[in-house]
Image (tube, rainbow, N blue to C red):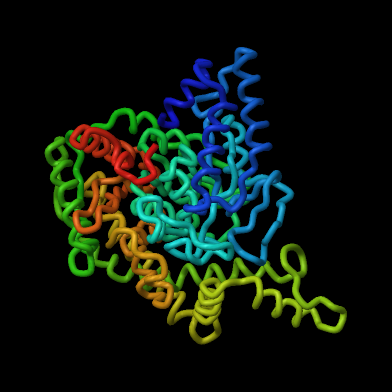
Length: 492
């Protein structure tokens, strides 16, 4: 069942929320030794949440379209009833005193939180190999990465351990794992979903969003936890775009679609290019008008991002100082606070987090601020202007979501630059704050692994991405006789 179908069945009392939660928890018990999607599963708490939903429905309430639907929750959102670690030793077993806004809204929607999913430590990575608690594996091929940093969430959905999952997208950390796992993943407009209670990586970029098996399911989850939040100073005070209506519409007739010239060509896997081109031709056959668009500043997006994001991370992670909460090392009464802080951070942070803190601190240092961080912010402005100019002529922009399919575990761990290139196509939308979505568009012929089509829209035009994504999904499902995920080795 899709999440939408399961929600309808629970409300119609054709099944119960307890039965649904139990089925997914049993599935997780069967496959977790292979996939390692979760850091924490809580059967007792999940079943208690499910029973509460069943009781509300039995009393005649209508708790909403996703009530009773299980969800896997990325371990970067605070939860009062489960640990929140951000996959870091420095927060091992930490239990927050409050729920993130996204967590609270999942509960308000009656969703059943199964547990917390694995991720790259503090959301820094593109493969979920940077977790302090072990790598997650791609259900399509257990020797390959599930993407990152929301790789635990994408693997949980792809392995049918949950129908829906939450993620966060800082430079592509929802769309990239969704693409390599054959799923739908959306980055809402920056500020369209609340960052309150989200452990910060880069505050001007972090965006919570949904991961799902279908465009409609993603839209329902997007709508459930998005909207203005007075607790978040960067929250947009505007209505949530009509994403569910757009997903149900699934029509691109008359839409102007721009193919971004700079997001393709040399360095892109041939099978990715082939499936992307076929998706563009499909859009044309469905009535869209396709044109090529140039966004020259996109060529500098990767460099700008890897100055801005580490700079913000070096500032945000300064709070993990062994003085307030989390890990504390060397506090034996003989060492100064500074020594304890140094020992704690040395032991608590992993190599990639340390690399980015050092990069960011250097970029912000006296004498280098203008040359590095200041210049990167100027490039960010140019990228936003390129988007604005493009959207004067087209309704959406499209590109491959990733330059390649899922790469083997361990292949890029010794080459940070190769790892960073996994986010080449997704970073521009984060720097500009635009809405973007990845939808499966087939399997690469050379390795049989999923390829994602990225759809980008202007700020607060998230509904356009769902409208286009749903049209592509419906046409491909009809052509191939069912959803792409049915071809996965873990399909059930």
